[in-house]
Amino acid sequence: MWFDRLVQGAIDTLLMVGVSSLIALLVGIPLAVFLVTSDKGGIYQAPALNRVLGAFVNLFRSIPFLILMVALIPFTRLIVGTTYGVWAAVVPLTIAATPFFARIAEVSLREVDHGLIEAAQAMGCRRWHIIRHVLLPEALPGIVGGFTITLVTMINSSAMAGAIGAGGLGDIAYRYGYQRFDTQIMLTVIVLLVVLVTVIQLGGDRLARVLDKR
Amino acid sequence: MSAANARLRDLDIPPRDAEQTQLHPELNRAHVRFINLGKTYDGTVQALHGIDLAIQHGEVFGIIGRSGAGKSSLIRTINRLEQPSSGRVLIDQVDIGDFDEDRLVALRRRIGMIFQHFNLMSAKTVWQNVELPLKVAGIPKPQREQKVRELLELVGLQDKHKAYPAQLSGGQKQRVGIARSLVHDPEILLCDEATSALDPETTQSILALLREINRRLGLTIVLITHEMAVIRDICDRVVVLEHGKIVEQGPVWQVFGSPQHTVSQTLLAPLQHALPQELQSRLQPTQVSADAAVVLRLQFTGSATDEPDLAALFGALGGRVRLLQGGVERIQGHALGQLLLAVNGSAHSAEELRNRAANWAQQAQVLGYVV
Image (cartoon, rainbow over all chains, first blue to last red; front, side, top):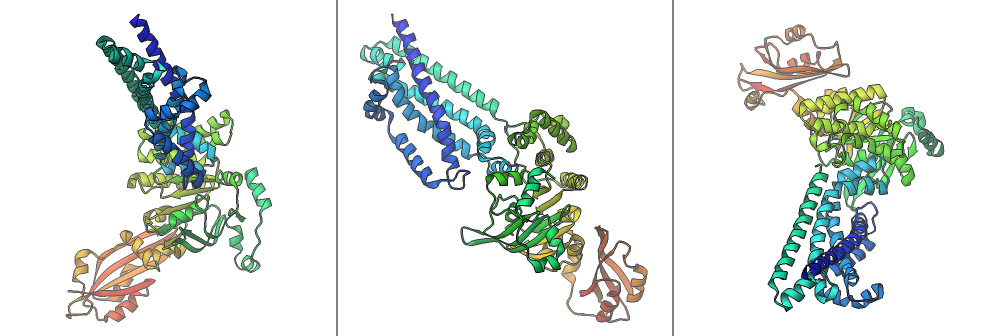
């Protein structure tokens, strides 16, 4: 049944995007904090390490996702034991999403007024207090906005992963819509994707607005 | 005094200069002391140079200067937000130069600080902002609550505790800043241009609050500003900073009464009773005609009851004496005044008029002649 197939595809897409974004969130925030605080003039100043990590992030950011996915095939096989299916897609998706999200979160963290860090130091905050009580809460609205963008970008990328056998809505649209000229399925997938992206974007925007007390 | 404070004093008694101890006992009682302090940025820009200064317990000490004079760097060396390039900073005779993070944190809890742009956490409520220093110090919740309530009451913001900083006016934000700076019962309060972003009325209310805190809690206040009015209204002593050096220092009444350095004079100018513009333009350096009036400036700095006897002064000058401009201000029990007079048809020469006027004033000066 094509309906069951669509449901399965939607679940696969949500699973791929959800798992890879969750890992990107957990790894990306510490990475972003490190990129900001280890920079020159930061609270954990380490310019050499900062440059190395920055270059590493840029490297992964500059490779187009389709190429990254193919290039990572041996690595993916090593991690999940297969190069086919939802879990095989999670590996390149995560590796693409983490530096992407880390850079966006980094921008929000950098925008925190230096005066606030100074005030925190003056009141007797230790450095990790500054991260916990100043940098992260003050940058939170921006980080939420950045995570929303990451989710939407990952939905986009997951469709590409679908095309090389990961399953999901992208796979369905490609196989039925493109290879079999089934316009009805193609349109249904498009509508589903539009609804999904809209819900995520609106939800993210609303959350960011609620959190922003400036 | 806190336990941490007592411990610091026991551990770290700096070598004392025997000669200075004998000659200047007050230096060894100083609360904050700078010894030959210097600060250089990027190896080239000299922000501070050879600063020697002693700030006493319980005083309100002002540092004034134009922007870029080094005020901001100087005040930040007290809690080591700024690391000096040379020289030493002593707090209660303890050199803070080699403090590690633990001791710096302990030191900073003894020193409160407020800022020009308030620097409140935008994502935290008023209550959470004031509570933050206590929270990071690991103070248990019941004590935190009591302290925050007490301080919000002191600054008059009990009913605003749920508001976010963005919902407050500038004056209210600075009150939150003051409450936050006092939660650890500091011995020193640093004010970094604390009223420069506020309107005159709010400035007055914040200065009044600072004065009250200084009297009630007996803490030492060090403030930097570029406004002489702030110094006049609240400080006991003042230093004038220019290009990273101290160019003038003393009790406020003295610096106000007879500023020696041109920078002090420039900073004071807006508060002084200057010759009206229209007269200034007509002022001649020499006596062009016989009926020209001599313009005299008299400055006096006396005790509060020492204002000049005007009838006697006018009598001694002779002729027709007109008051062009004048005023008396009271600072720290001293009457500081200036009179600008025009004298017509006196029997005396300009030089003689100046000499006679000098009997009533610390300084008398002939500015010129007007027709």
